[in-house]
Image 1 (spheres, rainbow, N blue to C red):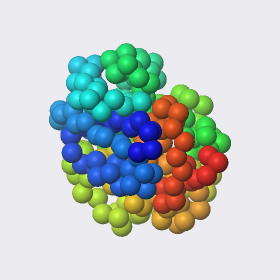
Image 2: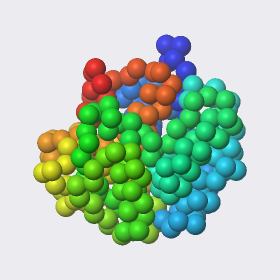
Image 3: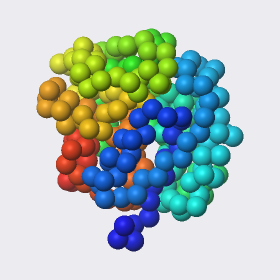
Length: 239
């Protein structure tokens, strides 16, 4: 579109990938998605397998015909589960495989918070408690204070993908705190692109959802400037 190259996303299985098509229409960009597969269980060993070098290399190969300007691993839990150093090594290997800048949703959250100037957050995770704690630890390792954290204890991505708008709204409300400057909702399996504005109006603060953050991070590392209404504070003009 208008000579701008696309940004590619490697997405685990099938759950909320429709968010990328919805965002592409709002941003007037091509945002191709390649799928990699493994179990969708939110457990450490399974997540490490899902984010393995072989699976990400396969995803990069699937995206290669699109000639993306950047590639993002669109799986929060399949990146932060490796810890800060392991997650950094993961995206370095992905960049080498893809031949273009690469990142992951986990680092997208860190960079988005820096762009918004937010240092204190609440976390509304759909994960089981132990996995939610690993996400909070990853964010805290980058200098962010976790003011509150809640988990829904949902064991699989498929179940997260079936959450309704009202269930997502309740998750956000239940886990926010007035001390937090932003609320983080970290699972890319959750349909949230069409609900970010509603949640921000409801809470009166930025709400960073995994798929919105992933898309923003891809544009950032590709050097593509795009703004849109309907995607929350992160995509506002001048951000």
